[in-house]
Structures are given as C-alpha cells and as structure tokens.
Image 1 (cartoon, helix red, strand yellow):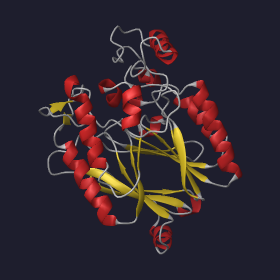
Image 2: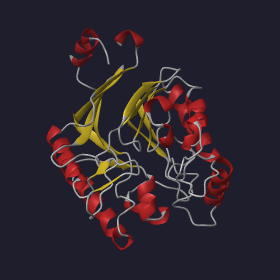
Image 3: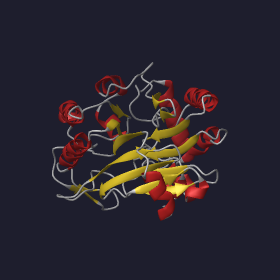
Amino acid sequence: MGSSNGLSNAQEKPPLFSFGVISDVQYADIPDGRSFIGVPRYYRHSILVLQRAVQNWNHHQKLKFTINFGDIVDGFCPKDQSLDSVKKVINEFDKFNGPVYHMIGNHCLYNLPRSKLLPLLKIPSVDDHAYFEFSPTPEYRFVVLDGYDISAIGWPQDHPNMLEALNFLREKNPNSEKNSPSGLVGLERRFLMFNGGVGKQQLEWLDGVLQEASKLNQKVVVCCHIPLDPGASSKEALLWNYNEVMDVIHRYDCVKVCLAGHDHRGGHSIDSHGVHHRVLEAALECPPGTDSFGYVNVYDDRLSLIGTDRMQSTDICFNPQAD
C-alpha cells in the first residue's frame, strides 16, 4: 500500500483533482438472488447504494467528475422493464453535480442494444463503438475502452463484430453453453460469452492515444468494464484479448493504472511492467445497510482510492520509492 512517510508527505499537498467511482450496480426491481456460484445479489438495494454514493460525492464538493464502470441494470431485469430501469438508474447518476462518464458492461447489453444504450448513457460514439478519451487536466488523460467491441451480445445478429465473436467462441470454447468454462483450463477460462474483446481498430486507436499522451508527458488512467490482468481478477472475468491490449499499453510508460469492474469481489495487482490494476468491488453485492463506492484523489505521483465500506481503500504509487 505504501509507507506512512511516503503517504504523509503526499497528503500534505492537495490533490490535482478527485473523481468518484462505482461499479456493477445491476439494479432490477426483482427479489434478491444469487450469482451462478451462489454469491447473494441484492437487486433492489443496489440503487440505494448508488443514491448514497451520489449524496457522498456531492457532499465532497470537490469531485471533478464520476466514472461508472458499467452494468447499471441486471440481466434478470424483465425485458419489458429494461428501458425504464436503465432510465431510472441514469436519473440517479444525473443527480451528481458534475459530469458522469459511463462505460458499457455485459448486463447493460442484455437489456438494450448498443444503438439505444449509448445515447442514453451519453457515450460519445461513432458507428455504435463505445471507446473514448478525455483529459480533465493537462497532466492526466483517461482512456475508456469498449470491452464488448468484439462481442456476441449487443450488436445486430449480422454485424461483423458479432460474427467475429461467435466464430471466436466456437473456436475457443467447445461447450454448447458458451457461458460455461467447463473443461477450459487456466487462462482459457476467460473465453466465455459474458466477456468480450477489443477489436483491431480500437487497438490502433489506443496506440495513437498513448503515443500522443507520451509526447505531452501525460499520465494515463485506462478504464474498462472487463479486467486486464489475471493478478487482479478471476480467470473467468478477463478480457478475451487482454494480452493484446496490455502489449499496446506496455509499449509506453504513460499508463500508470488500469481500473475495471465486472469481477464483483474486486482485486489489486501490479503487473510485470509496474502498471497497477484495480478491480472495483460491486455495488450489487452489498447487503442492505452496506455500501461499495468511493472517490479517487489524484496526485502527480500516485492515486489514492478512498473506499466506502466494502470498497477497499487503495494507494497506487507510481514512484517505486513511494511504495
């Protein structure tokens, strides 16, 4: 996490800026249930977690923006309620006194196709792609990846990205149920339908953004619904081609941390190139009366995640001497 000396010195200075974080709200107006592996899920309570998060962020008063890491409505939401449920959750986010940046997750796409979802989430989009970047200060750039760029959900049935995903799953996962990892070994267990991949065009775009950020001496925070490092996530929750994405990221020194959701238990790792990976604990799995959200203080040499309740606070130091 960091030595007390390194932290106290950094905390004497105010942050460059701060931003709110939450992931996997997965609201639905249905009774509580369980995941495929038996973890309790609190579908109606999760929107209360979001409401408390927004109140907390607004009370803070100095948050520059908030990032939602995807899956705002659960796949078990009755489909005749999908649109109203998505709008209901977005309405809660809109109560935040500042910009909210969304990314799409698999549960979002179980409810609505991209063509309807992206305008509702105000995701800047060309041809229904959902990757974008923004720079809140001259020192930092945020890159939001579309982890379901190559996906068997969300695209029209005849879309090239859908067809590529279906062919990929047929090749990689022999099970008739493509969300089953049965028989898959080790990292192969990520080849499931509820995950996805980053396409060639997006990889080229990412490379261009990181090249430009490097020239500007910017530090980069990469955000994706699906985790990008096996050390921070279960094998079943990884991006299909996380290795290709990380190959691009590792060409440059500018990316300091990758933030993600999707794997509800959360996690933190530092990869072989010193890039931190922090997977955020899910709002959905908070029993009534508990929470999972936070905000991040951004400094020149580190990020400090201040978590609430089930979201673990984490100090992410870029300078090895600060560890």
